[in-house]
Length: 441
Image (cartoon, rainbow, N blue to C red; front, top):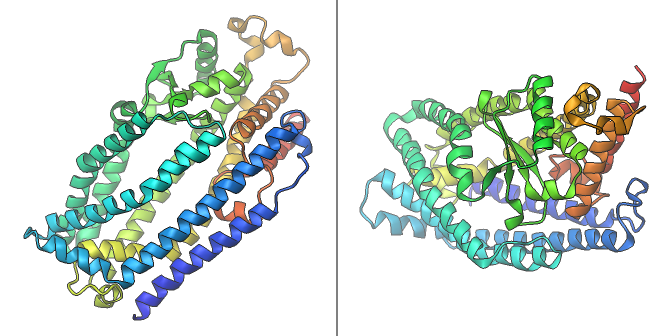
């Protein structure tokens, strides 16, 4: 063990211990009394189930995380990385193909080792709490398709990265940065058309009234929208969601069928307006710019460490190579990634508040003048569009929390470390404050 080995070992164990502390604090923060905002939404039984679900998921996460840490350390100190290197070098291929085989073997082994945990999570825990709709056949099909995509897309991409590092030396990171950036942007166009339909059905939204409202809303806020789809999310889980895909004039809304079944039109309008808010507030563009900058910095740092023999000595690998360097640098970089993850979560939570505010201000605007709604708008005579949107957004959040058995009272430290979205009670409070301040202007 040298200084690199100690840094990586301490980082792994520190990250693990911080996770344990956060989990334990989160469990202790649970309150027996239903928060006043959720009275009438949760009853005693459903609230108890949500807490039991959080506890069981936490215990399972601790077990699987501990197993992964122990396995990694045993593999490391037993010379596993050198052993796999000897196997792939024995195939007699060049450095690029050897590297592809090396990383592929490591990834396949990780997948197989984690498979029992995935099966238990899906077919025992999620089944126990009424979420799982995945059949064994669908589970196997998803794995096969994911493996095929990894081979078809990930394999050539990895080979390209290895080839550039082998061929261009110190300047390789610049070429790879450009290639990965183009690949990421291209994937935004390819995924909705070619990849996502491999796993789910996307059918045009059948509810013409809702579709018309969504299209008129998009037009009002100058949001280019190509089409609206319903996705069969219920074939895997009862949990609900909605998301956008594509860029420019190719943007599409995908609504889970479970969302359509469990929410009113106003609530769906508010959820969609929230997602539109991310685009209108430039959150998507900012995220992509940060991602590109981040990948550039990581690739530059990687290029500096690929020639440091001490990094390979820390893992008992006798012959340094680009492919083992990719893995070892990833482990060395882990402390920086952990800090960046916390900072990005902070930014994401800020963006969620901003998207909520956008939804409150715009979701129902123009409904009173929209003759296509018939009596819908008239049912809310005397209530401002901001008040309607705030009610719809909070009701949607409450229903989503109930249907997903969300933890309503997470510990602040756990939320700080792990949450990309603010806790639901904080979001509801901010929505009400935004509604009051905007209505009073």
